[in-house]
Picture 1 (cartoon, protein in one colour):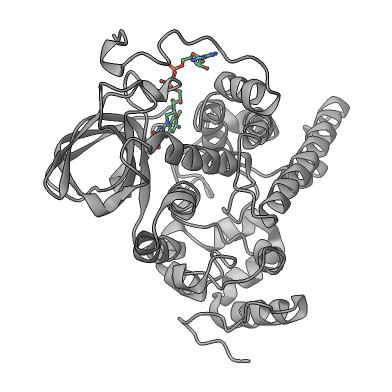
Picture 2 (cartoon, protein in one colour):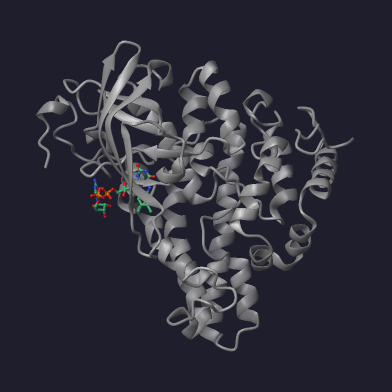
Length: 421
Ligand SMILES: Cc1cc2nc3c(=O)[nH]c(=O)nc-3n(C[C@H](O)[C@H](O)[C@H](O)COP(=O)(O)OP(=O)(O)OC[C@H]3O[C@@H](n4cnc5c(N)ncnc54)[C@H](O)[C@@H]3O)c2cc1C
């Protein structure tokens, strides 16, 4: 079997595990730069030192064309059409090379909505460029007055012939400045109760009616934005699901998001940013600052992290039965958010005084913050993004445990009559 450079890995749908392993190894030998292959033996930090983000993005089309990014997706959508078990073999083989999937919001947020509620034309048009990172996606859901209570959103979409015209403001839109498209929730009928009058669209961001304003984050970067929509146009063929059914479609995206943030999504890398527990264990073994208390804490984090991984494996196994990610994904989201914050705090403790003061030109500190510090600061958002911990606990209570619903006096009231600030 010969791999075809920039082409798809030649595997058939019912390939056996040994065939999958052989094909992936051959692809790695032919397509992964040798320095990256060698660095894999030294773990995550060696890989980080061997390749910059720019290197990785420049090489990524090779990965994107291979079908290995989403191996269980049909070939027509950019995958290889493999079974979930065969796709797992792919993931296991590639794991050591830390080939993170680019375009995570396309893969984990847009794609589930298209799979569950899109039509065939939309899937064939949008999924392959998502896999290949040729069209980058963001999520235009939250607004200044609609975060946890997302269904109260005010952005309007009004019909104009074959188009919709969109007006409103979206907030905290991660990577909007680097994106080509966004999944958008907009109100199409203000006379209906808040959940019933929403429609789900695929918005082209590169047009005059869209203004993207960067917001500064706690680490000094600006990964998220305010997006002002003032007469932005969307052709009706880029509406997903029926008019007024956007809340149902949004739930596919929100479940996918919670899965991504819990580490059980299709990211390919089983965690959500910052330092990984195994590399911290290795660091502690050689660290003179490590005392018995720290070792005990690390052992507890290690055990919890293993439980998290097994839970994620169970979630993925559930997908094998064809069950879409449901409200249970909130359980992993709540646990992973808190665990990752504790892991990243441990990373900064291991760094000692370097976590508080550093020279920006010190070797290894390519940006102004040490990796461990920016990882720790970034992890503060883990219990907010993708729905806050409190809101996810409500979802678990109501939709997993079947407890009584949180009272909402405005549930059945027309949106226009709901009081807003
Ligand atoms: C780093 C980051 C990236 C993000 N990226 C995106 C993105 O790309 N696209 C996007 O659309 N959004 C994004 N968000 C927005 C995110 O989804 C919202 O911040 C989140 O849903 C909370 O909404 P809010 O900020 O308006 O807080 P609020 O809803 O105002 O909540 C404030 C506090 O009240 C609590 N609370 C609210 N309602 C309840 C309730 N019913 N029961 C108990 N407690 C409650 C919350 O838990 C929270 O502690 C991002 C957020 C962050 C931090």
